[in-house]
Amino acid sequence: MRTLAACSTDQSQSDVTASSPSSPTPVATATVTPAPEATPSATPAALPATIIIGAEATDIVTADVTVLASLNYQSDGDAAVAVLRGLLGEPTSESVEESSHYPRAELTEWDGFTIGVNRPDADFNPRPGPYNPAFQVRASGTMATNGVAIEDVNGNQTGQDFESTADGKPADQVHYDETFGIDSVTLDMPSSFSGAIPDYGLPMTYGVIGFTGRDTGIIEKILAPTDLFSLT
Image (cartoon, rainbow, N blue to C red; front, side, top):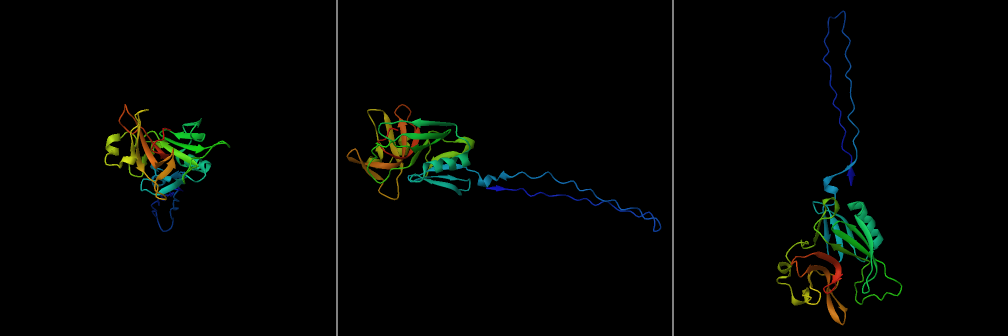
């Protein structure tokens, strides 16, 4: 939202002195100099301050947590990218991601935040379950362009300690991958269903997932929506 700053003018009144009743002195007229024309500018309260990643939608909010946009993962992906361009500015990179297990995706990135719009081929076999999103999001840092912070709905961010985040979680919400050395933890689950979907013959925990490399011990990226065993 843009507002126009109010223009104000100060009008000074010259002192009028009379020389005599018979020969009045002309009254001086004050000259008003207009203030420079105001330029529309976004007020700080209307600027995006934080990207909040949830299991079913990502919200972009202001500093006072007013929601500027709520991007549901089932909604139109191209429209979501257009909204982000309007709020975050032009992206820092654009690319295409190919995968044998997931649909091809067009990636648009604003520094530490990426949206991937799924572009499945005609012969792509969608995964079972109630949650086949039109797009996914990924946080690879704590800040996007223009200083916009990135976190999940519970305040988790990349860079925080993985074990502390996983501490106290149910066993089915933490996965230690001995083969690839990429561990994962559930950060948020959907409210519209149980948060588990049938996949690979097992019920898979699904939602906002944090990932770490075994050699770092910190959450390196946050994806949504995805499953606990996903390595994307």
